[in-house]
Image: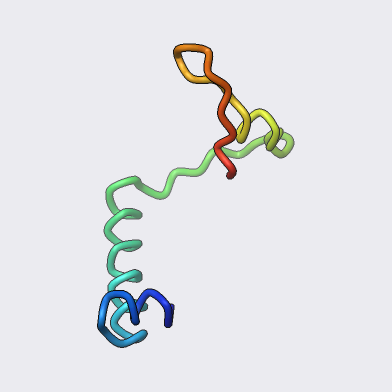
Length: 61
């Protein structure tokens, strides 16, 4: 938070407050429905994929 505040030229409290407001808005827009999985997702398939042109990418999640 401190680094972000320094870059933005404001206090870390402002960054925390604005982040919380943004998260609240996103949660309101996206809803609270959650998908229950029988088992955890395979992280390899979630992070390594190809583009529509077949180019290999690592999303780095």
